[in-house]
Structure formats: structure tokens, C-alpha cells
Image (cartoon, rainbow, N blue to C red; front, top):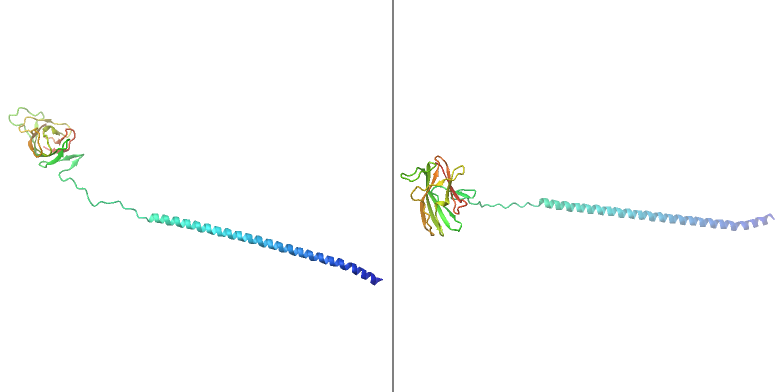
Length: 237
């Protein structure tokens, strides 16, 4: 009887044990599968993170290289600009000639005794004027008038019509003292410069006289258009 009960008990126990073993195997398989899936997920995440890091590192490296290239290019351009030679200002080896006859002051030519100078009138006619002599003198003997200031400034003038017609006259000459006072003409001398029209090539010669103060410097100016002086002569007593 005992053997029979043991056999029955064993027969009932074996299926239960087999079921438990199968359940444990399934559980282990599930756990193994879950572990494998977790491992694969972790591996995938690590790979993704690694790939993203690698991509980020490559992008950073690329940006650094691009920035370095830009800075190098900028530095090269700046260096090229700095090294560009400065163009030298042109220099001239030719010097403008100085006036050969006399100096000019404010557009008025300063002339000398017995040195001819050439100029033109308002019509473009050309004349050459030469003051041959200048002196402070007393009134000539038998003169019908006496200078108010005591002396006469006498000039011997030659006028040549070098191009075109010309009209010499004492009215084209004035004399001023250092204070700017203009001297009066003096008419009590012989051989005054004639007011006679000249044709090209003709010459006129005569005296100019001014009523002046003794021991005073005067500047005689020539105004061919009666308004603007073109030449002057400084005469000292």
C-alpha cells in the first residue's frame, strides 16, 4: 500500500516539477532576452552618443579650420595691403625759368634805368619802353613856371611800337612818393614826350617831368590802359 501511494505521489509530482522547470527556463529565457535587448539598447545609445560626439568634434574641428583659414586670409590681405608700395609723388627735374629782365612785384614789373621792357595795351598792341635816364633837377633857366615842391624829377623816355600801332603819351606815367601821394606833371621843360600815333616799327623819344619834393624817393609807374600799372621804376635822390 505504501509503495502504491509513493508511486501515485511520484506520478503527480513529476508533471508539477516539469511545469516548474519549464516556467523557470522561460523566465530565464525572458530575462536573457531582456538583458540582451537592454544590452543592445545601451550599445545603440552609446554608439549614437559616440557618433554625435564624433560629428560634433568634426564640426568643431571644421569650424576651427574655417576660422583659422579666414583669419589667415585676412592676415594675408592685410599684409599685402601693408606691403603695397606707396606711389611716389611725381617730381620734376625742370625748374621754371626766372624772369631775365627784372623782378615782378604783385604783377607789376620792376624795371631799371636803360633796360628796355615790352608790354601791350588794351588793344593788344605791343610797345617797348626804355627809361634812358632819370634825375632830380632844378627848373631850367628862363622857365615860365616854378615847381611847387621845389624840385623836378626828369625822365628821358624812348617808346618803340614793336607790334601794331601805338600812341605814346606822358599821361601813361605817374610818380608817387612813399606815402602814396601822386606828383603833378611839370610842363615847363622842352622836348616833352610827344603824343603822336606811331605805326609798327616807329620810335618816339622825349622827356617826362614831375613836380617833386627834394630828397624824397619816388616810384614811377607805367599804365598802358590808364588803370593798371604793369611796370615801375624806383628813383632815389
